[in-house]
Image (cartoon, rainbow, N blue to C red):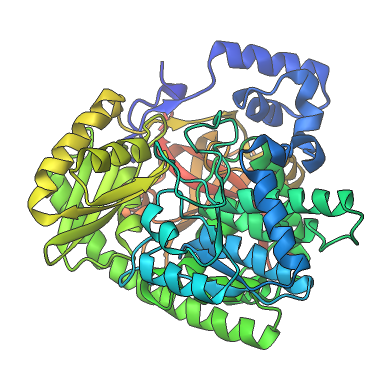
Length: 583
């Protein structure tokens, strides 16, 4: 039975509430703790036993951080890294051009700078060089350095690493590995095929951080002076983890929680400048990392100079940070314009092809490689299916894909590459990249659709709206929201809690900007709550709420604290609404 009997809301979704077992667990947790029901509902949905509730709400990194030595090649990688530091050798960092790559590079550059060493940063151009190490770049870097460290890339780069004969190469990555490893001195990757996969949820920055933890251990064992403060680097790890859509489970949850606390101290010039240019007016949250900071760091790699993001994150100069942040903000605006045009064309093409297939895909002439991944994410959200978007240029197409929970897109893409249907391809469960010959595009997409169908992609229905429970406006307080946030951070693998607020009147509703909706709701019994719905006028939600005509609605969304000029008020981030039966 649908929650509050909502089978089809204003956005066409069915509302799903907690089942009987979850409600019983919630009751038991309330009896065993002093926590509000709403908090207990969030914890039980995440599978937290009552006895572990308090510990879960206050995660400690020391309890959740895995032993770095549980990863293959970790001790070898740290020992060689430490040797290069001790001998003052020349070190180069080859990084991917996204947030995870830039953050991973910045982690190493900042750590080495604190140790008195300046590392060379190399980030390939997305269009001219493509993803990952290439033979010319690695040959050049190896000739001028003693150690080359590839971060967020390299696991499948056999030829490029083979070409780096004049230097040792270390790979710190998280992308799915192949049957064989490249000829590097060490390949540290929780998604190597000979790993258990227990730490497969880590992003590359998490792997780099673990290597620095292992390096600190080896320094202690060698009776060396202590190295840089690793806890102060967690803002970079948090940014990468959220922006790379790594699941916020296990150690990731503690890394992000602690990283947000570090970021709130505003000590890293690049993140301070980026926060200011993004007009962040409240303490950083996972939302800010994923939707304000991350896209701006990514903008350089997408449509600008590939190393801008990494340079911003690594700089210790306030002046340079402000200049780079302004540049990235402008590029991000330009990126949105490019993305909008590609998105409209891709959505029309995908709709004509059908949004109910196991794979939703679109390809277009000259679509910018820097935005196809974002557009694939939009198609994925629209269809609740894995999506691929490809930009065609000459005889080839370069594309990106995004997946839905339970469907391993990276493995399917890698299989296509092995079968020869792709020129190259790889990634992880939720995201992947590929290069395909133009004349093999339909064949490749048909085969990929078949592989994804075998994983159940074709049986995924429209995205239901899952709700944690019911609240009345009077119960929504700053204190309650802060307690709920203690169960976070929320993001991939840990969806933000959402609640239904039943039978509300719309007091005020107005359009804000091009497509957003600002409104005030009340229950007719003295309880009221402000709400905002982003992109509401891109769906039937916005117009229907503005033209409410006195009707009453059930509202559903996420609770948040709105900070404006030093004043904090509760707010509902409205996701959906439906007419109530009392209307």
